[in-house]
Length: 502
Image (cartoon, rainbow, N blue to C red; front, side, top):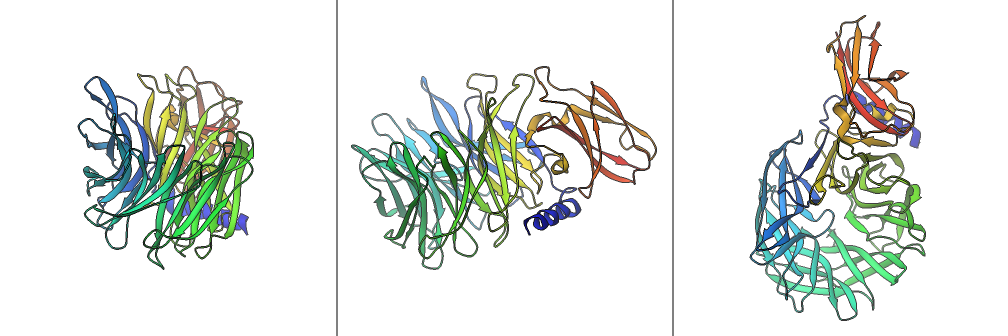
C-alpha cells in the first residue's frame, strides 16, 4: 500500500504540480548582522512573511531584535520591519512561534531581555502586510519568563507557552490574556529539574489546550512531554515518554481529527538519535502510532510537524548531521499514518562556502502544492556568518521538478541550481542541446557526475555520465514539451535546468 501511495503521489506531482510550483533557494541578511529564521506564514496577498531574530546596534552593544521579512512567490524580498524597544533585546520564541488569525494578521510568542530585568514573556503582533505592529510584555513576578509560541484563543485572547526559572530549577508555563493582551491567568508545570514548554495548540472539543515540551528525568535523559489542559490551565492528563537517551522538545500540532501530532527525535545512543513522529490520542495521550526515520546521527531530529490538509499527508522539518560533513536542513513527507513518502536533505555551496551548514525551523504547505521551509544558513562569509535561509520546493521536495527520479540522491545543494547553462532553448526536435557547467571553484563532487532527464509527467527519459565542463545532449525524436535536467553525484543533486522541445 505504501508503494502504491508513493506511485500515485509521484504521478499527481508530475501531472498537476511540477509545472506550476514555484521553487527557489534564498538567503537574507536583512540588517547586515547575525540573523536566524524561526517562523513563516502565508499572507492574504499570497506573499510570505518570515519572522527572525537579527541584530541591532544599541549604544555600544549589539542586541537581538524581532524582525519580519516579506518575500514574494519567487523569493524576492519586498520589505522588512522590526520593533525596537529602548534598552531591550527582543526575541522570537522558538520554532513555529507565530500563529495567524483569519484576517491575515497574527501573533508571535517571544520575550524581551534587559540588564537587571531579564527575560520578560512578550506577545508581538503583526499586521496583514507582515509588519511587526505592536508588542506587550506580560507583568509576571520574578525576572525570568521566556515565551516560546503564541496562538489566538477561541475567545479572541491569546495563549503563550514557555519556561520560567527560580532558584535551582526551571518550570514550564502557560499564560492566557484577553483580546487586548491583558493577563488573565498563568500556570506553571514541572518537577524539581528543568522542564520547558515550547509549543501550544487548541483542544477545540473542550475549549482547552495541548502543551508540548521537554521533561528532564536526569541530566542525561530528557524526554518528550505533552499535556492536555482545560480552559483555565488545569491538567487533564500528562504524558512523558522517550528512550533512555535524550529527546528534544516535543513540538505539538492539533490535527484535523482533534488528535495530536508530535515532532521530535528518538535517542538511540549517547549523543545520537533518529527523527521521530507520533500521533497521540486527544482523550488520554496514548500513542496511536509512532515512527522513526532515517539512520541515527548526532543531529538527527524534527523540530516541527504540520498537516498538509485535514486528514491528509504530513510535512515536517528539522536537520541532519551528515558524518564528515555538516548540518543539513531536512524535510520529511509522510502519509497521515506516518509512513514515509520521501525525506530529503538540503545543503548550500557557493564561491565562498564549499560545505555550508543549514537548519530548518518551520515549514508550511503552499497553495501550489509545494512547501516553504525557513531556518538559518551558517558558515557564510562575513562578520557573524549567519543568514535567514528559505527553501521553496515542489510537492516532491524538489528544487527542480523530477529530482525524485535521480537514483541515489539524498541531498540537494540549494544554490548551485543555475550552474548548468542550457542552450538553445527551445530546441527543435532532432536538434542538439548544448550544456555548460559552471560550478564554484571550491566545489568538489563526491563521486562520478551524471545527467538525468525527466519529462513534465515526472517520468525518467534518459541518464548519462557527465564529463568535463561542456556536453551535448541529442534530442532525437523526443516529443514536444517541457523537460527537466538534473546533474548529480553519488548522493547529491547539484544543479539543474529545463528545456522545451518544439
